[in-house]
Image (cartoon, rainbow, N blue to C red; front, side):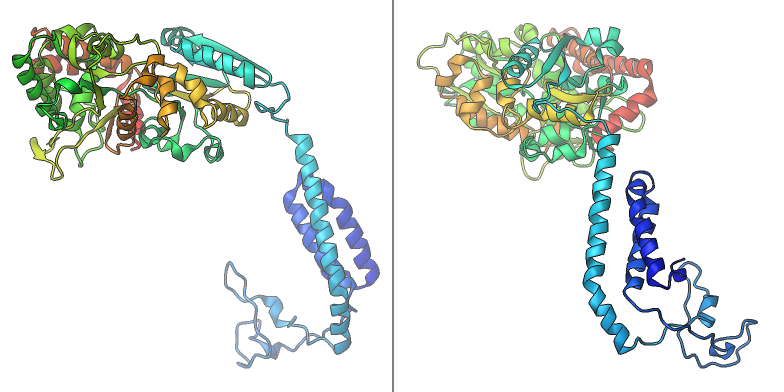
Length: 580
């Protein structure tokens, strides 16, 4: 086609026509636009160079004969081949390369070169402007929070009224536009989830992630926003980023922080035992038994959260170090067929040690806060749990010295294939329990703007304002390393003057940075699974049934729950939660 325009007039006409077509092509047909630019380049070049003389057709003896015979092996010009087939191009036989240009032609070419460059740049700039104009007219403008354009968003907060109130309060003082904060419970989500799921952002308990995925209420978080420096993604604790926020190797939600159980004890009364008693669960139980025989002033040796909704989780926290093995990624279910593993030796051993604690039956009514209240009221020597902003000031004597450490670990781990215990070569290993108490924020499937909803989540859980907003929830702790002054926002007001706050900060950071962790069931119906485990723990602590028998009954209940919810969907969800 360009070969037809051999004169300046034809080249000028072709150039004008190509330039006039560029804006329309940029909006409708990008390949045609590219062809027009290439054509314009050739036309501009041809105008500046005097037409070459006609090239005579060479005799057929230049290359092989058309009939396939070889008349002469000598080739004066290279034969062109196509890229796809590699076959000879028949045009190479009759249209060889043009001869060298004359000195006059080269001079004209050099003189026209600056104008060629200018023409190319003008075409590029004009095309970019046309494309930008088309996109501006074709795409709807997305209004983002804080942009000053008075947006209106809807945030659904599940099972956390205090967090919902704090979000509404902070938005009224710092946000732009209208933010409708809706409160709901998990029961309401099951009953009328479709009507509530039409939210831009959904904040939900970490334990409910399986239900949210199964109901298709949320969508993955966009990868581009993860790199937003205001989010501070890499500053978040590893257990939150990899253990709670990821689903099927993608970031599904933004972690708001997760409360974790820690071990609190009276250091002024524990001097004889030393810190070695907190390295393993069996050493801790033996020390508690010795102390109970020596001193009977405390009705509970160690107050643990064994009440409704907590007994099964406390068993998982104790069994995590025994069940965590370097050869297996799964500890609760078999990833191939969803057979429960909770009736195995790691869980039986952990439940035996729990039931053997002096005064364990008194803990059946405790949750994490009331367990620490027992320590604060001088009714126990130690406690497992955490304090929140509602906790009352302890009535301990002035000489009381409280210390905070991580939960104990274990030197042994169970190999399921060999059905034998392995001793860890590096000594005791602590394994953190995660994914049971925190809060996650995700983009709703029916969000009006995915990008703006992601920006709203960054505002809620980002570096700048998360300590002001997320600290209102009793189920959260700092999601990233923070100084002691910032950690105090998650504690009751009277804790600011306590000497144990630095110990608490260090123990929390060590627990949440631990690469070895066990996640609570990340499947639909996690509450039902844990309720069956609560009953198993209560039966053993009340001495109504042996540990192996009680956990066997719980395993049968887990099988029934899996069959009711669908074994294959549960298996797929469990594997996605593990990143398999």
